[in-house]
Length: 615
Image (cartoon, rainbow, N blue to C red; front, side, top):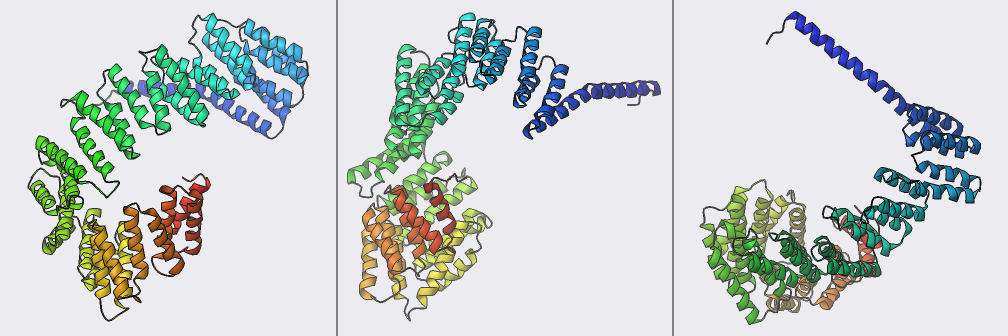
């Protein structure tokens, strides 16, 4: 669109006028900011007289600004010009008698002259003259807090409540004052008062309490106060929510569940907070509480709930994790879990929506119920479903190949691994399939081909796969060069396959037979390392410790030594609960095996156990 020349001229003039007006308004602001910055710099450098002059100028320019005037008085007092400070405060009080916080400033000037009684009178006068105005009350209390006169700040807020006829007002402010005073019980009480307001932000209260409450005694004070509030205010959901948060901090998930269930029912919610609590408990391996939470959603919310399917799936998953914490499963436990999986899949079918559950069920029947053929049938049924996403289908194929390998169906296993490798050449899942295919060859005694594949996988984008490929390549090379026969290595690879199948007694028997038949073979440290892993998986921790310690003491130069040291340290840290021992072992690793790929992680774990702030 074209504008007439006259219209463009008017438009241009308007723009110039607007810009000129903008800079006219902006320049004084920029100037004041620069002067304030300079005044602050003078003060930091100890040039208090210069700072006072600039702050005085800025205060006169900005009559309503308490900031510049307060800094002016602060600079005068630092320069020991008490007389000027006292006169300036008196003059300011005449100009602004409604600013009661000026009496606090006057009191601090009198304190500098050691006139404590006169100072106290000014502090009292401020509270006496306090108007029924929220801003004035807050400013006066802040002035007292800045001077660390916390009792006077409390008195200010308490009088403010009376003036405004609102006993719940300033609860958070009072809580913060008592926080500064270190009086935890009163701090807690006032924070809980603040939660009487239905619009209160409980997250800010939780954040402060998380910082301030550390000891069991303090948590006890909080719980006692919350019990009383829940009893007094039955319809206020803030208190049970805060109590559940308190329980979660102490990992008391069952008690937390009771509170979130109460809130869910009180507010007629959809179960979100119950599901989140279940997930927390599950992550922390409190499977009983997690199952209770998930089962509540199944029973109380019913099939119409958006959480119904996930909750049913999660109950099964937790039950599976719970009974599999101990590999010595009773036939009754196996049968019960098997039946529940069947009921779930009968209700929801084997399809894309239940793919994950079907994979879990297949793993259960293959590795724990010792029915690998049924696992294969389940996954073949799942693969026939055309609605599976490409990544899900590939994940299922890898599982299916694993079970074919366990079942001895070599060609089906390698075919499936190869298919996934081809479909995901540059992705992690493709590298995983390639690695498993190479390891399959290792298990079956085709060591040369396996080593060639591991050499290629050294460059894998996954650090974990790359490290494992390097280790296996070196391992094969070392052990094939030790003897003219590959029988000991074949026996060892077979023992590893048995361990992979969770056939632990057979695996241990095979490992022992290698030592018996080939007592002088160089696989001893590798045998000990595999035995230690089996003992750890079956929770025979004392035997695992002994095996790792033997590797470290008798085979310090072998390839397994740094891994044994790291695994032993981790065992002491996470299972045996001996952080000092773990710390010592981590330190030995990054000092004695500084070139190990585990050295960096060992140093990090050492620093965490030492109490360093590690990001």
